[in-house]
Length: 394
Image 1 (tube, helix red, strand yellow):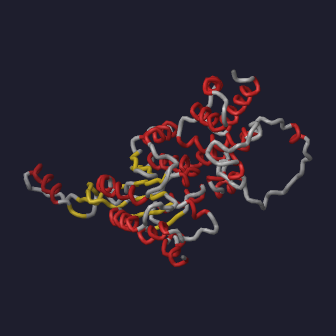
Image 2 (image 1 turned 120 degrees about the horizontal axis):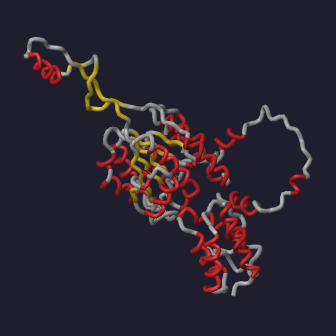
Image 3 (image 1 turned 90 degrees about the vertical axis):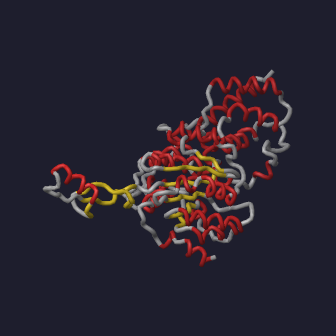
């Protein structure tokens, strides 16, 4: 039987997971206690995966659960033989996962705050300091806590794309412009040819479709949910085709058409099998070029390639597939969250193989960067977005 102390710790652990953003209810807590009673209490590894099977229902919940388990149970476990993920506590001593701040605040969420009430009040003139909203706009998504992620997603909901319509080959009736001979002759038949009124036409303006190719590998996991939320917002304003890739390509366009963003992200999670895994950019681009490019890259489509460019396979085929993708679309914009780091340099082989075949290279690590992407979709380009500057620097 599970002791009262262990059952209480499981309840507190479930509350911490709920504060960190996982949908953990009372029924899941009861199931977790029963599962521990049935599975036994032999090692931390077994205990980890027993709770994991109950509390984790989506791929993007795994990093939060893993960090929460390490922070919560390291002070409550009688033996420190190693972490459930395969490494000892020494291996994680210097690690700083992106979710660490979020989980730490969730652990401290239920502590007594009486000590904070006794602090001395100090008046600070903050007129010349950066506002809280401005700091949130520049903060990296990977370093945000749960409350800041929610606020950032609300700001993304308010984003509006600028007017970026282009002239298409289809024509529409107009009061002036090019003479439309077909409509002119057709209208003259009504009067028997006695009176001919000239009819005019002009090109029909259309918004170019947007194709999003988003990397969901382990190195991109801190940014995946926010970027999918941004893709969902784009889909409500433009015709968007969305694809996720890690080691394989998955079309999630239909899943992102749900009006509710949480239902859309849950449907994406259920349809993807390689979430937070490895990265094979070349093979996934080859799959896209062979089976999807002719279907979704018409009418001057704009391609947003969201990846850090860390390719595991060879880069020879990667350069060839990037060149084919670049020739198939009107604009190819590479969104790389690594540009948010001050010391970023284009030295990786995969990055250097991709840079010659993109029109723009932009960061996607913060709200400010996402706003710049919306402005860039209207056709504006800045010297910072020129990929040749990074090639010359490398």
